[in-house]
Length: 135
Image: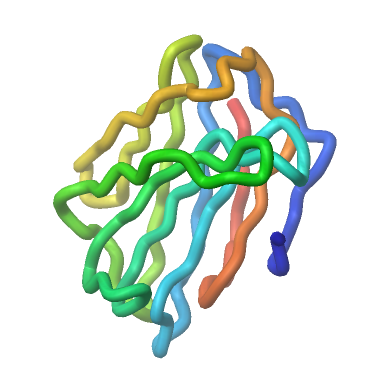
């Protein structure tokens, strides 16, 4: 399912923060950041859509478990611009992820799988990732 860059065997645990810096391509329609326990399941799928799947300037979040997508969560606000660098900071608690964007806005997404550690982050679509840091 994942076709882009994959980081495996990392250790992102409850209480830590994952910071991702990247730049959507100038003609980007959408891209995705996926966080999960393995390459098959995704506990948090963040999909900024410039113009894709019938959405414009929308962030769609979801989970993928047991071969099926769960219920989508759509976020208001859209802090992304094609060709401009973004920073996303993901704070991890036992019950949820709090994602803070470059412009200071934020969103929460439930930890649907419920694990206390995730080991895979992947990226797909029209984006160039320049930095990944766990603290």
